[in-house]
Length: 141
Image (cartoon, rainbow, N blue to C red):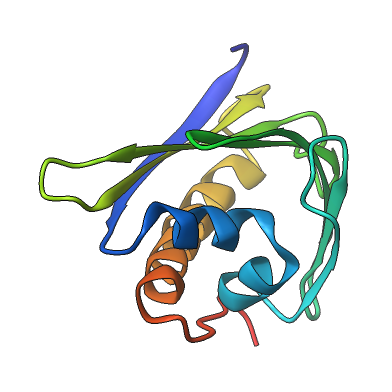
């Protein structure tokens, strides 16, 4: 990894397949991120995430397996393009899914770095709510 990284972790009381689906399917992403999502969640595919009255991000899917989902930002505001997000999936001793999250490759800790840190923290809690209850819990509506 080069540059600076944002790091978070959340534990989710759900089946690992539900968590993976939330990270790798169109329906899943719509359930916890926002209303405007398009694309295909296969390795080499792209997600386009358009926020109402906000930026659009385009992410290339670089990994999608049982333990890891990773994207590289192709388009986004400020220094976001070229950064990478990784969702590492594991099990806790009590059977929950642990999602270790990193957003790395930031050239510095100014600008959108702090804003994205807060945004990802909030979004991971929406991911947990969606995976646990199966009801849409978008970060933005």
